[in-house]
Image (cartoon, rainbow, N blue to C red; front, side):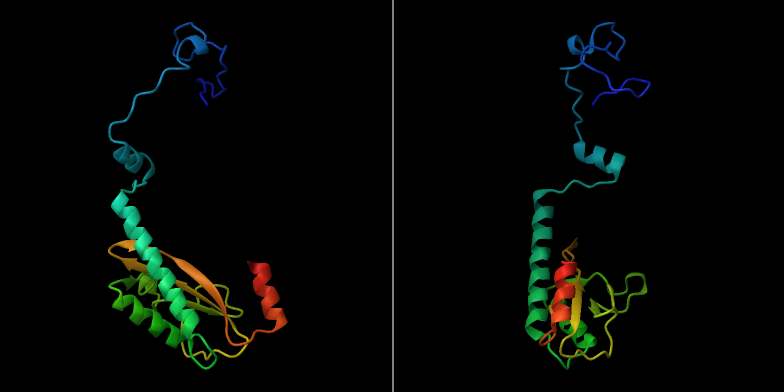
Length: 174
């Protein structure tokens, strides 16, 4: 939408803002603006956005696939009796084994490779000695960096057999 100098919308029959004296529809309405030769540079300078190349998108996709594998591993291993630090170790070792690093580790002092939030902890829980019990609700948030590309996702898991109240809370939250 084109606006004139007073920031009012310019209609088709209004005087053209270019100052020609013609109606907008007869003057500049159908003219195409200049094409920026270096669109990538324009977006970077004007908005701070780096436009992605095909290889960038492929790198992000591969990192996203790693996220899915990590969350599947957690799903397969989570059970009553393990600690949140056990989950951290599992995720950390799997991430390294796949030639990636964990973004949360040492980010602004965060001491672990994954965020593990149990029950009342809303998000970004720090893994530790807490033992998971039957019926716990656990959210695991992973962010690997693979070849310089980040991907971030989280998933909520039930430990063992959750009660009806726990199922209801998770259903409402989704």
